[in-house]
Image (cartoon, rainbow, N blue to C red; front, side, top):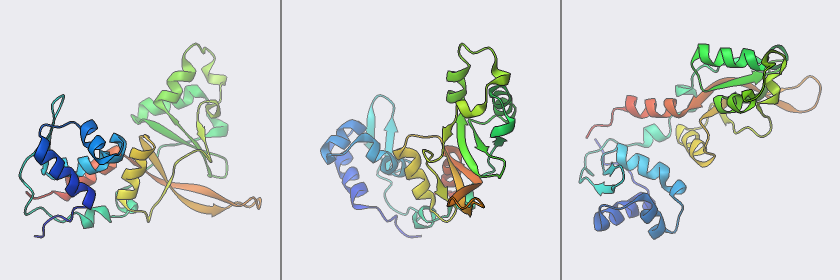
Length: 217
């Protein structure tokens, strides 16, 4: 079993924590002249690998478990296609806000993807979107879900041949909960390419990939 291949930034983080334990992510970021958001994925890898230990309201500690870790290259390079899950889809033209709320809670999901009559991705609507629009509204059965959704081209998407590291980075960088996995499809109208949704990636998919990888300490 090979030693983990750490990036130069991850090595610097370890040295900072070794010299300053306990230390907050804010202080680590300050020493590296970066934002805390930019360090989130590195700190996640180092804590999940048991190189660092995080204690709430205290900070990060060096655990000393830096040797004999399973190489993470295979995990970083695993494709989105291998871990994506089935998306929950509703049709924009046929759905009201009321229908969307019922579907979301019956399926127990955080977001619904909206497609048009040609099955092209139109947008995504989240629990937060639905909560905002239902406050003060009484005629939900006649209010279209398109009023609440985030539309193409403002959606952040991912392709199935992207790596799960790329997916995780998008979730962190854009501070979103879910990514539609898409493939391009030609529109018969001749207006260029549109997207077909073939899956979804969320934080649960990413976490499960780490758990299933079974890092051996």
